[in-house]
Amino acid sequence: MNVRHLIYFTTLIEEGTFTKAANVLHIAQPSLSTAIKNLEQDLALVLFDRKQRELTLTREGEVLHAEAKKLLNHMGHVEEEMKRLQHQGPMELSIGMIESSKFWLPKVLKTMKQEYPELHIEIVEVLGLQDINKAIKNYDIHFAITNQLISEKEVEVQPIYQEKFVALLPWGHVLEGNPSISVKDINGEDFIIFKEGFQTREDILNIFRQGGSRPNIQIEVERFETACSFVEEGLGVTFVPENYLRAERQNRFTIKPIEESNIARTVYLAYDRSRYLPPLVMRAMGLVEEFFR
Image 1: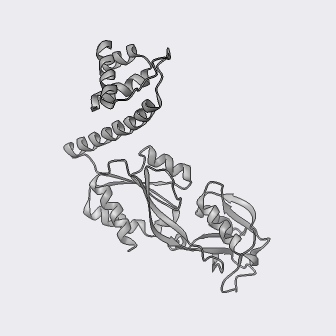
Image 2: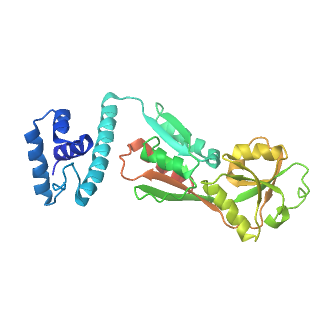
Image 3: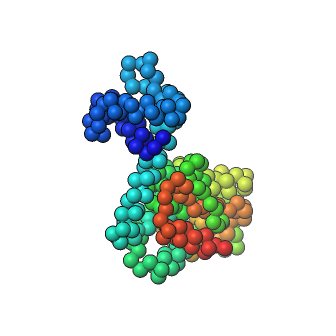
């Protein structure tokens, strides 16, 4: 089995017929047929169900097709990276991040810019699980800082730190004088929570479960910034990670520890382990891990 055979094999499947595939590959149809037969002989497997009139893969053929696409895709990215190195093009780093990482990520990026002055950095805010999976699979980002525990087998997920939640109350709230609050203290209060599909929502609901209570959900949002602004306007109370507030400069709300908030959420570094990552990306991930040692 060689790369040329895999290219012929995947092209044949994508085009649907030997004639179309041969035209795309700029080879004679008999040469394509011979190459496919040689591939089957090398693997000692039957890749196509020849009892069917249409081009149909066997189970073995389906597995090879899926893996061959990954391999060829990976090779394409390696070739692009080598061309970039050859022509000394701009170095690029694309990172997906959650909102609460903004208190420390700039410090890591400052070090990266000192080491790679020509480095171009792109930050993509990826919040929901689907957004993260899509960004990683489509190579929109090199890696993600996320609180989502991704279960995709191709994605490596490494815990880097934990953070507790705090409660936000509007100024003048009746509980403003309390040193801390319990979820039962805000039973019945209008609560601002994050939409379905966000791990933060489940983290908050777990805090309420721990306290034997349920939030009175009135507003659902996607961003901490939105939740904070709604609290400032007196539209309700909410919980946010304490690290998010470390980056805030001016707050018009009261911050209180949560008595039941013993369950800290975990923040992960996630990346596609099957993808080639340039040295500068590996260096960036190393700096992220070093920051929390």
